[in-house]
Each structure stands twice: as structure tokens, then as C-alpha cells.
Length: 328
Image (tube, rainbow, N blue to C red; front, side):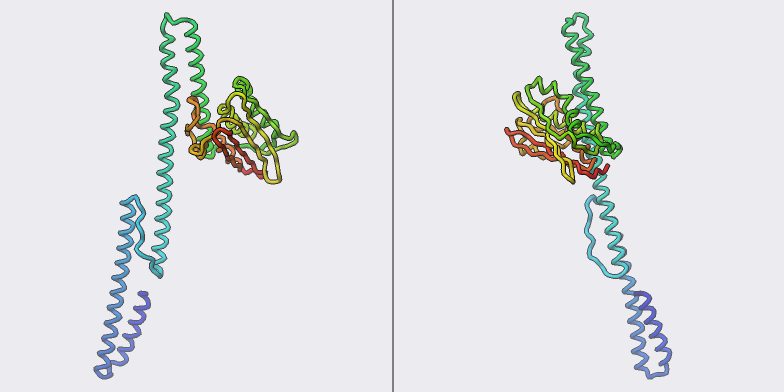
């Protein structure tokens, strides 16, 4: 707009030079026009300075406040485009800052949870170690404390291993393989570590899957994911109950169901069972609350989904879906 104003002033000045010999009223009119155009140029310059001042004040407010202040209004022209682009950049930076703050809080919460989970078994180990130092401690007590120390050390080892796996999954550092696996064999291997636990508790394990059914996945980690769910089902199924694993396949996905007729999960706790360190409702005292969270992460990393439905007193059903085109 400045260039247009100057161009008009040049034209008017040239016209003024051409009519200098005209009568006095004409010269007065031309003088007023030139003065008007000059004042318009000054006004436009003042308005531009005011807009820049407003924009500077806006950015200052943004720097000094945690909230995102609103831009006064949207202007047209090149300056309006500049304001719009700056506003977009400001919004992007604000969102990135909020995401960074959330990650910091999550990290702080995670470290707090890890500290709490490790502190408890370490305290038990410390107490029992002090008791073992007593020379008059009976032999049967010595053996009992030794077994308990070994159990707590194994618990800490398991906890650290799983927390490391979760952190690798979060950072996308755990590289999952693409392997062709027999679904039936995968389910049997997932249940094998808990056969004795199920037998001692009086819970029946049933597996039903066609022998020729195959799936492309990371065998080791998918087995880990299924095992965590199976373990959870056995722990929450009373004696005389059952845990059933079934699988079917279509052109799009392999579908695995893990069901039990146990105590079920209340509506209050159901939305949170895949959250790490969540211990709600009927979770046992020894439960850490990361097994199901890790299972979900492993399945999702293989372009899969895991969902759960449950009703108190009528059992729980987990649905795992791994799509045929696995993206890892």
C-alpha cells in the first residue's frame, strides 16, 4: 500500500507542476490533495507501527504466561498473513511444550512407581538378611528366610526386566521380528509356564486352535503378551473354574480369545486394567500392575489390538486381534 500512496503522490505532484499557471483556486485544491495524501501515508505508517506493537505485545504475553492468549482479530493483506503464520507457529510451540510437560510428569510418576515397587522387596531382603546374622537362629528359620530372600530377589529381577521392556517399547527401541508361527503351538507355549499354578489352584486350562493355522509375528514377545493375560486369568479364577484359549482366522486377521469364569472386573476398574502400575479391585498384593500394560504394548507394536469385556461374578474375556499385514 505504501507504493500505491507514493505513486499517487507523484502523479498529483506532476499534475500540480503542470497547472502552476492555473488560477489560484485550482492550486489550492491541488495543495489540499497533496496534503491529504501525505496525511494518509502518515496514518498508514502509524497504523502499521501500531499493528507491530500489538503483535510484539502478544508474543510477550505468550512468553510470560503459561496459557495461550487470543490474537485480537484477523487482518487482511500481507500483515494479516504474517500474523496468521506467527499464530500457527505459536500454537505449535505451545502444543509441543504441553506434550513435553506431560512426558516429564509421566517420567516422574514412572520413577516414583519404580522406586516404590523396588523399595518394598528390598526392605524385606534387608530385614531377613539381618535376621540371618543371628547365630542362635534355628535352622528351619534360616532356610525359610533364605528362600524368601531368593523369592524377593527374583521378584526384583523380574520387575526390572519388565520395566526395561516397557521403556524399550515406549522409545520404539524394541525391534520385533516377523516370523511364521503355528498358532496352536504359540498358545500351548504361552500356557506352559502356568500349568503347575493352574493345577495347584484347581483351574482347568483349555486350548482350541486348528493345527494348520499360522500367523506372522514375533514369536517370543507375542508369547510373552499372551502369557501375561493367561496368568492374570488364572489368578482371578477360583478353584473349580476354567481358562479357555481359542483362535480363529479370516482374510484380515488372526483372532485369539482368552476367557475365564472367574470373579470378573467391575465397571469402575475395567477401563484402567491396561494402565501400568494400576492396582484396582481384586488385584493381589503381589501384583505389580505392569503385565497387562506390557501385553497391550507388544500387541499394538505388531499392528494388533487387545480389548476386554467383563462382568463381576461372571468372568472376563480378552480379545486379541493381529492383522494379516503385520507392520512392525
